Length: 349
Ligand code: ATP
Image (cartoon, rainbow, N blue to C red; front, side, top):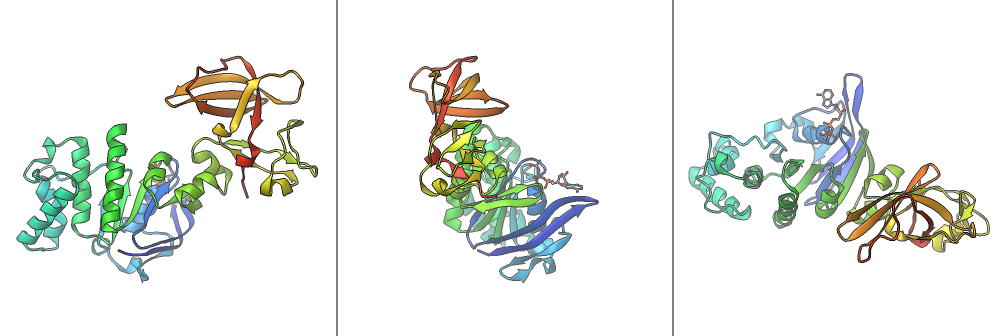
């Protein structure tokens, strides 16, 4: 188990700045997810931690020791990539013990470790199988076992499950999380899938254009996004900018959305607010001109809920509700929208 401190890490490729001012303290045994869209710098950061690339400036401290002094192969880091890079000419057991062989660990100890890990990843008895005779999910497990065989101080995974079907991916997410808990190894997992990050991370680090937008527990980044980017990235949010009047009303497009209570009641002027689709209500247009009116432009069933998308002026508002009834509104219908402002979150920046 190890702590890892990233101190103002920056990386440029030519004139392109892939990482900017990345500062992060990772605790011993923590499960971190680096989350962000394509090209935000996730893999670059992971490669720098692994020693496969070197930062342009800044420092990485593993248990307080400057990592730049430690060569890549001496960092004792276990890695699993999307392209698993299993050795096709070696069987399952030999793949798992490959790193131990290089470290000249005695054969019997290698054998014992392979058997232990095969059991850990649920592949007992398959040590002699060629890797070509395994399913995609089984190969993934071999890659995980191989990375863990060297008892790494850090366990890095780069989108390890993205090529798998949804059911298997979910299953392996749970398995990896349990395994990580059991072994207590400090883990950094790269993903672009917010649901994956939410379900496995102790802390999610959201990257955007090479910068950390926010680092927090899944609950923090979901319920208390610090930036509009995070609010939009972590599931669906309606971002609106009402004006708060001295009288306590939240006004949007000249219409009162209601009077929020709590901290929001003290606000004045325009503030950006994020509100989840489940905290909206739709009703038929009353005709008294009091409500915010939208026109339905899309309705879809999402298993347990119905999602309705409405155009309100030039913005899109999304509403969801449990689908125990048929949708009340159809494409082209007009509906009056009300907001449960006490469930909204004011975005600080
Ligand atoms: P994805 O989810 O698509 O894999 P990512 O967040 O992992 O994206 P990176 O692979 O870290 O993104 O790349 C970050 C940026 O740096 C991208 O714009 C990429 O084109 C650029 N980049 C990465 N490696 C190099 C390189 N060796 N030379 C030049 N540019 C690079």
